[in-house]
Length: 163
Image 1 (cartoon, helix red, strand yellow):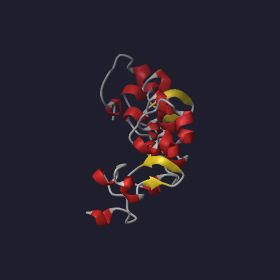
Image 2 (cartoon, rainbow, N blue to C red):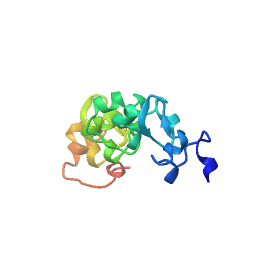
Image 3 (spheres, rainbow, N blue to C red):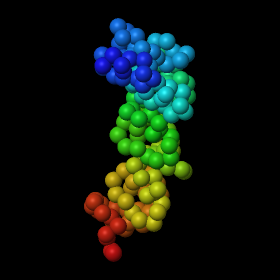
């Protein structure tokens, strides 16, 4: 409806077009005349938003994504604000390009150990797979005795041995 144009709320679709003046200006971001997004208030709100928000036209989300883009230029994830938020995220986040989720997936003392649950390293329970590797200090030492005692034992749950 024409009453949606210029009503102070950015409407999507046909409203947010050049022909409709970017919804009568509702979808124009102040300071970024070529930035036309659904949520203009997200630009420069302190949270790095991906997609059209993190573009040159939108000032890389009003500066919110500048540091992340400089630090991890090849990191392409759906929610960049998850990078370095203190929680290890899996998939594309836990990659070298994304700095192992901004360091969230790096295990202190084991710089080449990148696991989903860093808190499992050295927790007193022997975890298998990538945890029980040289890079992860054989699960922070949790698997050392087991690996010495049963060097050829390859099971899904090593903590069940001798329990």
